[in-house]
Amino acid sequence: MAALILKTRLAAELAPINKALDDACEALPAPVLPIVRHILNAGGKRLRPFLTICTARLLGHDRDDIYGLAVTMEMLHAATLLHDDVLDNAVSRRGQPAAHTVFNAASVILAGDALLARANAIVAQFGNPALSQCFSEATSRTAAGEILEISCMRRVDLSEAEYLQIAHGKTACLLGESCRLGALRANASPGEVRAAYDFGLNLGLAFQIVDDALDFAPGEQTGKPTGGDAREGKLTPPLRLYRQSLGHAEREAFDRAFANGTIDEQMAGEIAKSIREKGFDHAARQIAGEYLQKARDAAGRLPDRPERKILLLMADYVGAREK
Image (tube, rainbow, N blue to C red):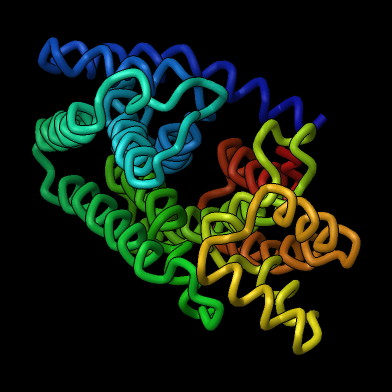
């Protein structure tokens, strides 16, 4: 029943969210539109605008202008995906060819820049400096998280604190700022704005950790190649636990392959199988559960209205994700 409630609410919001996205992107220059439509039409959960809308409704904002504001976070997210796929030389995104394989890389990077600029202009039109600052913080922290991740690639000595700093920047802060954006639009109190941000931030940290656990799930379950993080040189929680479980000789061999980027698909598959057999993916989910509890605690500091139940259901959804 709980899953059905969340699914129904998501479905109800999806159409106006997508319409607001279409309206926002219509003002982009003609050469940019095909690239932007390529990434936006590939689908996505629309989690970030949904959080903005739910938070605003929870805190008393009942006007439909929230949709135009909320989609700016999805535009920011889409822009980062365009840039990331070029940086990672990814061949696909959400089951579709990555934009830079259809268009050229330079055009895709510039289209991402144009999408960011358009989103920033939309936020500015609301005439509230706090909203613009929120969007700016989301943009700069996301970029910083991506830069930090790049600088830490293939490091076997990556600490837990450094991993969390990366997760905070590349995923969690954008969910936190999405909630903050909705709270600010609702003219919430400083305490409510903080609680909304804390909810989104901890939800985002859990989301990333669960995502990292799912990276080692069978490909037929997730629809993605298994063990991609091992091949790409990202020392995520399940991979760190796997490394720590190895004997001295095995660990040295893993470290060389990880640092040199020589982990192939077969080796990644063997690592993923071992991670599942030893329960390191489950252990990572337990870590995510701690952040989900922090998210629930933050939601408890918000008004007791129907939308708060939706936020709590979202925490349940993140914890139960299987793909």
